[in-house]
Amino acid sequence: MINKKINILFICRYNRFRSRVAEAYFNKINKNKNIEVKSAGLVKGNPLEKRTVRIARNLGLDIRGKTQGLTSKILQWQNVTVVVADDVPPSVFDRNKVYGKKVIVWKIKDIKGGNKNEIMTIKCIKEIMKRADKLEEDIKSGRIK
Image 1 (tube, rainbow, N blue to C red):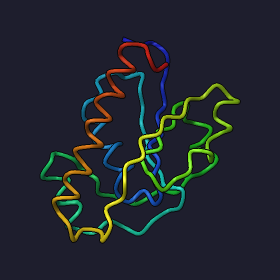
Image 2: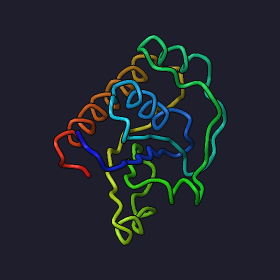
Image 3: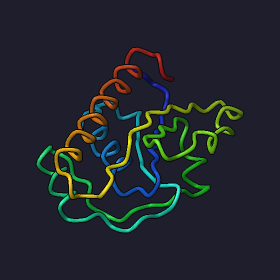
Image 4: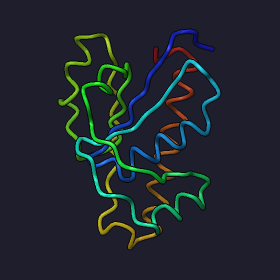
């Protein structure tokens, strides 16, 4: 168990889907009170479509709520950034390293066509869940501090 406070920021392009799924799932599996997570988009996106919210809910995740764009406040808060998306350049977070903050890149592809392809949406959610499980394992083992 870690004693140091870890603030994880999950980031994608619009904070509509991928980063929200990562935040919701990590909050569901995380039992360590020293770890806090948030999600944001490089740009604040439009609200999610009801069908995407339903698909996530069927997998046990609540991704409802307003989208959030990246702010200086949230950048100061985080000490680990997880770039969930393949369409967000990790170089945006190069300054993290200067301040001793960690950047992790997952490169999860966006679901083209939005909610029209339920199978791809489920596949994407499950891939994010798998990566979040590994992140939690890496934190528990001390590989990520």
